[in-house]
Length: 177
Image 1 (tube, rainbow, N blue to C red):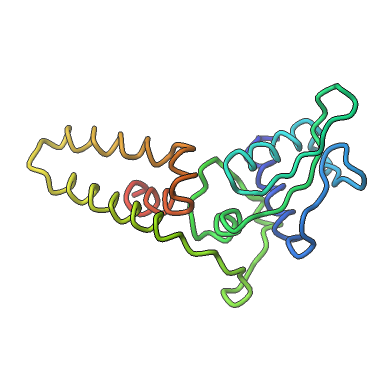
Image 2: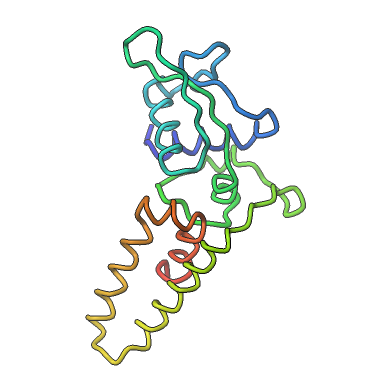
């Protein structure tokens, strides 16, 4: 099974069980086993990747065995909810099994924490930079190169940390046409 589908299954599971709070994974007691067709290593790697890209909150447990076994508690965060509900593009490829995908009405959707004033200011400044590039009196090739650099910046982990959902909102708004 492709990694993107495994990540989608983990994110869907955490979304469906978000009212339970943090859920155990790995070698933790009562850990969620991988679904049939997904091996434990791929399941836990997906958890680690979702945590790395800030789609879930991860609280690791110390490995007492000394074998480097991954265990801990995961919980979908506001950014992960927004990605799953389709409000923001994901910073990492995630594929969903549409037959299992939760259908959520707008009234049922979890509220998304607003961006901080600093994140909003940076996002607005970047929008002005994008507009300036579009209006610049330079060749289309130079505009394309500038936009490519901006896209690379917005796709970075640093931008995701700095801007939160704003980074992927800019990508979705200006670079995925």
